[in-house]
Amino acid sequence: MSTRTKLVPPPEGVSGEGFFATKLNDVVGLARANSLWPLPFATSCCGIEFMATMASHYDLARFGSERVSFSPRQADMLMVMGTISKKMAPILRQVYEQMSEPRWVISVGACACSGGIFDTYSVLQGIDKVIPVDVYVPGCPPRPEQIVDGVMQLQELVRNESVRRRNSPEYKELLASYNL
Amino acid sequence: MAIETATIQEKIAQEFGSNVLDFQTQQGIFSFEASSEKIHDVIHFLKEDADLNFHFLTDLCGIHYPDNDDNHQFAVVYHMHNWVENTRIKIKTYLNGANPELKTASNLFLSANWMERETFDFYGINFIGHPQLKRILNMDEMVSFPMRKEFPMEDSGRTDKDDRFFGRTAMNSQHSI
View (cartoon, helix red, strand yellow):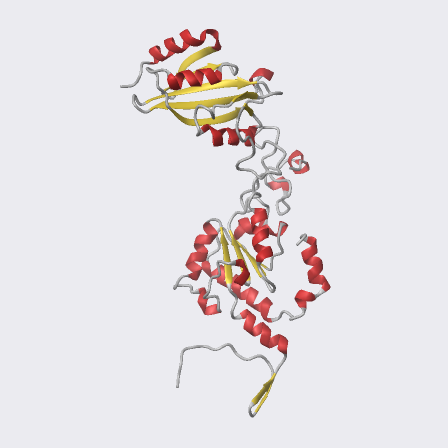
């Protein structure tokens, strides 16, 4: 039966009659990468682009992100879109702290990445001043294609991430450097 | 419809004498200056007087004049509106640079509460008698009053800009907030 549905290719492994052997890392990475639940933290125009990204034309659901989680506890991927003021920074941190491991962060747009045009006393000069960021998407605002590309970059990271990474001393050191 | 500016001026001058001065019409709005000691009474009078009846406080804000003398460093501007006659009025009061303080208008207009907090937040003007004078828009940890001209607009934590190309000065980048 022909179908237009594309399946994710299986990871490298040894297959025989009735069995398939591969690495746990690859299977977990495959599962995680293709079911990233986004938590949109949208504060301005990049959020509008994200709405277009989620809608039917660009359809982020194709990448396993159909279910937008508005609760940090069930989300895997925090997408920060828009200007974060210094007053907002502790709230963003709190949202990040509420997410359970493993968690990833995409910083969408110039403001979230570096403060953008808002080089001013009230604006946080990039969210990486308060939380660790995995993928930066440039643009002011970025087009939906760029946001999708950012998600695909993150999928690549997730797919290749060791299941032990979150317990590693390096990762704990990273969190400690943010006082998390 | 509108109340005659001459009538307003006469009433106010009669009530407050030398505490009000510099009557003029700016941008079509009748304006005058009041001393900071009497400003509360002036606002109260404008609101309660049966003929004037400026019952709506449109705006309240601060201004910093760094080039003025010490007693005119800061100004607080009140915009009031009489909806019945559709007449507007603007009152300005100057404050000392070292000790900018005046009585709150929040007991006359509840809307003054947040506007005075904002003015305090950005200019550090102390409104005596305000029920909750704390920062409203900026983060609580901030120590500067950012709209005062001596504080830089730019954030000192910026790392991706080359100062030479973006009009930042050395002073700005040294200053930390």
